[in-house]
Image 1 (cartoon, helix red, strand yellow):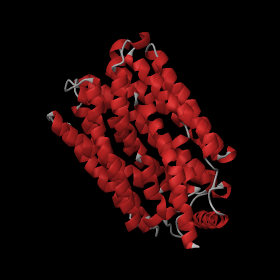
Image 2 (image 1 turned 135 degrees about the horizontal axis):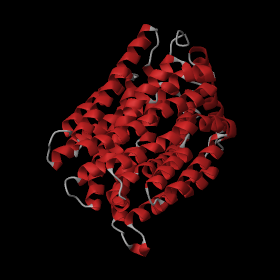
Image 3 (image 1 turned 90 degrees about the horizontal axis):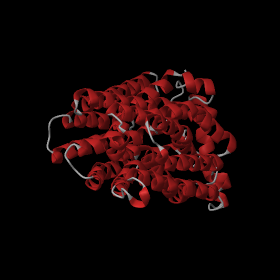
Image 4 (image 1 turned 90 degrees about the vertical axis):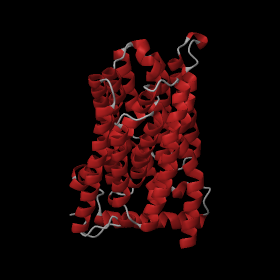
Length: 438
């Protein structure tokens, strides 16, 4: 049985992960490509750093409002249909960002993009629990989330090249950037309708024995989690442990989008062209993509979670603080690389914690809540960075703020681990003790 379960997991990883990674890469690129568009759009439309920061962050208001309802809808209507709906919706709106003509339309379209994307990421995290046992999840989530640095690594040069198409067909370069980069999502959404299966029971590409064994393993895990974790909607939305994880994720996301939205402009201060900026931004994300997969694999191999989150956050915070010094471009890139590496190594392992204590409706709502509250960091972080940049004229204070957020996240992770040990909860390998539900 163990061999059949292993074979089924391997087949699921080979079939599902490449497609989901591609979807998430496109998702993240469509979310943060406004950072590259800003290199020309801000001047064309007269956006100040404060306006841009607020517009970049307002995405997360729409995202927050519709995150939990979207994940509950996924559980009700099935992953295949609902994930496809999300992907097609955000693709159309991402392309429509080319219609932005001023501050009001910028804010409105960013809000609408957040509404369209709501539920995609926590929906995929929930979907992965339908296929992969808990002992595999740090590695699987790290592989899935490697899409983010890979998206920026590839998307940076592509975005830079599109910006240089200024005047083609009477459109500005940033118009082309939005139009072109939104279309792949529409095609992927249509493909999802035919490619994804709602769970092992529906997978014709598994043998009968593989379907039954994998479904049995996952059902046994779900039963154990129901006995020790949270499966009801009220528990998932109110328990201190779930809220602590949401606050931890908030700190991580402040750093994630701080670097995602603002790194192109940090590099632009050194007088580089859009295409050069695109290639330079790819460097930190290349190392982050490799590092997060290896780090997640190490977390699964050792069964340790807490320090695999805290250590990278401390490293990332120190790197942000270092980058705040007046450094030449080469050392600034080294500092930003370590910052990105710390953030992504932490975020890949992080999602093995909530999936170990949530199941059923509680998982659908709890994962969405954690992602929603966490992604408020995407609103707060860019907004504060914009205000601080406009007030001081440089990024020094903003980078120190990002450093502080990551260090705070490390402290929360360590406190969470300490509380887990006090309550006889083991965060190792996704296992929870009998006292977890108290």
